Structure formats: structure tokens, C-alpha cells
Length: 287
Image 1 (tube, rainbow, N blue to C red):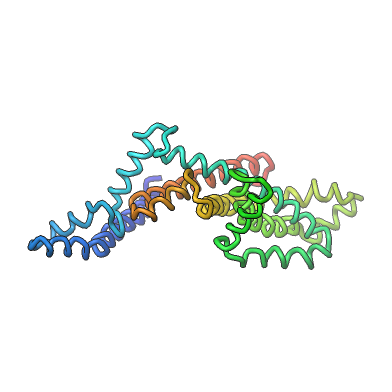
Image 2: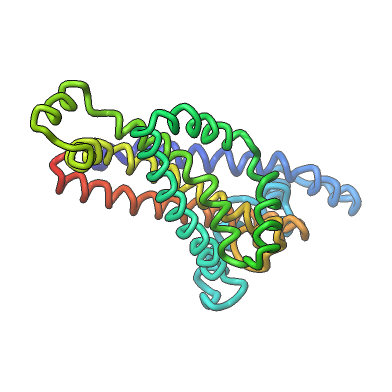
């Protein structure tokens, strides 16, 4: 266990070292300019200190982001609109709804594509083509159309999340449902199994590893969709709103703290799917 942690800790240490070095490099021009206007010369130590303590740095140092995270996650009440926990829940609710809708849609399309040759030849190319449209271009259109229909709030963001999350589920499940080889399919026919029995007893169990892998990708994509969905609406709550407000006022520390919170949120959700995967596959004898 200890030996397995050494490579991970080494990579983490290298990332932090590069982060601090990049903060010095990017923030040094401002610090030097301030010193020049005050007729001061900065030593190396003073320059490094100045680049790591700016209020609005180009790149905040890791400890500045850590302080911001502590202030907005631990110190603030979760009901406060300055709490990242509050904003994370707003984004997470849209993420989970979009993920659920995307998983159901992807699962249904995959079944149709596998069992219907017409859908395989017609729907699958459109599914692939749908992902070539930039989400930043289509998100405002989805929001405008749904608002015109009287739908606002959670659902438009969830629809954008669904748009991003259904694709990996479709691709993964098509691959999974087609994973049984010809011998296994012939054996099912030898047992006089119908299409429903073939699906439930062979294709569906065989597709479970593919499904969970696809769900992990879909969850991360769904979170991205929820954040993107908050940007065109000028939302006042959610991680996207924090990113938007930070960009308006040049609060790079706020932007980075929201980004790291989103990364942690995605890691936790993907980790929970991984736990569910191990439990389900173990019970199915596929672990």
C-alpha cells in the first residue's frame, strides 16, 4: 500500500511544484510593475512572495485556492449564497437529472440500434454527428426554446447535461450488447430462447462492464453540461455562476476554487459509480 502511494505522491508533488513556478512566472510582471512605480527593487524572495499573495493574480498559488476553498466550504453555512457547497448542490441537481435522462435515452437507443437494422444504419450516424456540434453553440438554443415553452430553471440545464451524457452510454451499450460471440448466441438458439430471454440472460449481463464504464464518462460529461448550461442564462447560483461572476470581476481565485470544486464533485460521483460497479459485478460473478 505504501509503495503504491509513492508514485501518486510524486506526481502530486510535481504538479504543485510546477503550479507554484507557473504562478511566479505569470504574476511576476505585475509585481515588478508595482515595484517600479514605487521606485523599489525586489529581491528574489520578495518577488516570489509578491507573486504568491496578489488579490487578483493571473494564476493563483495553490495555497490561495486552498484558503478560498476553506472559506467557502468550511467557514460559510451551506445555505449561504457564498458557500461552494450551496452552489455545488445547485449544479449537482441538474447533473444528476441530466445523467439519469441521458442514461435512459442512451440505453433505449442502444437497444434499438442493436435489434433494428434500420436504426443501426440511420440513427447511429446521427448520434455521432450530434457530438460534433459545440455545446456552447447549442446550449443557448436549448434554453431559448425551452423558455419559450414555459420551461425554465432546472430542466434546461438537465437537458444540456443529457445531450452530453447520452452519447457515451449509446456507444458503450451498443458495444456491450454486441459483445456475446456467435457461439453463445447459437447456444441460446439451441435452447430455443426467445429475443427477450436472449436479451435478459445473455446480452444484458454481458453489457454490464461496458455500461458502468460508459456511465463514468457520462457522469463527468453531465457535470460539464450542467456548468455550461448555467453560463448563457446568467445564473446567480451554481458552479457555472461562480465561474461567470469570477470572470466578470477578475476574481481568478474564485474561478480556480470553483473549478477544483467541480473536479472534486466529478471525482466523487465517478467514484460512487465505481463502487456500484464492483458491487453489481461481484454479485453477478463478473468481478
